[in-house]
Image 1: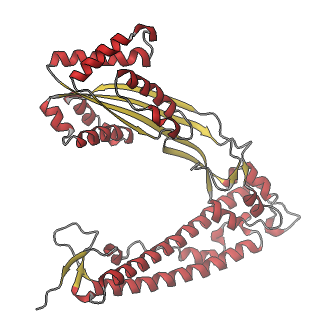
Image 2: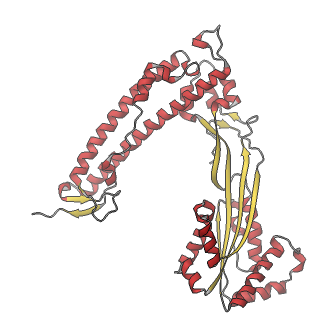
Length: 409
């Protein structure tokens, strides 16, 4: 959950920065038109606010367009958004884990196992976004009365939350008077938070104007932790840029000749490119096996749930949404699954043999740090086999969904 790496230990994070945004919006036709005109809802942040409104109104059996057209409810959206960035690994103090050091150090120098386990890159920093939405609805008596209530509501919030006039200006009587108006207008408050600190959630509930002000204040506490929030971007760096990684590898020699040390900058380039190749090989191999297991599961599900009379049962093509769904018989699906199973198994075995030949050659003379993989004949042959099947038509029928029964002539 740290997005750093299992191959790092005692990770220390630098102090980050944050951008805070507070927005008070009247939700009406002009608001909706401006959002559509500016294509605002194409961004994740704006989509989140729209989903908050949609889901809230859906619970009441209505929708945003209907409410705006009927003009019977006033709607207000209050948003607090905190974007946190520059929270990065302090690479001067963070260390490689003991297991990673064991792979890299001493006589072992097993870079292949290291890159298989740790990948070619590690995450150096993350950008997180935490959002607090409050969506409020109230009954409209008339347009003038409604506008006054909106202005009063905004003032009631900002006097304490933003501190325009200080906290002494409000009295309990003022709160009670506003709460009475809110009750007459059937004011409803809906709270939605994304990427919040779990320890602060209990203080976000609101039942009146005072608790609503407090919930917004408490939302800041729930938003501000640097290690919570929706991850929206990340900075990655190759392990070869990591000082601890280079120290643990030590000096590399050209062609394994102890009298000719390899240039450090050149070793890094070889290591980085070869690491990407190794991690790509592992991705392809895992994809093959994942597809193989999917085929086996589909075949088992077909036989277990639909019995032996598969020739007379048709199943839906799950990738075909047209009315003329290209259904296939259960027997055809079973036969295709058997073919796919055997094909994937053979493909994986061939790939594994190529991996063994390539990796043995790379490790034999510390070639991973002294030349590019594509200059070695065994690795060239392996690269030609790095093609995973992008389409197996039979998987469009997994897991099998009943379509119809073939009627006898």
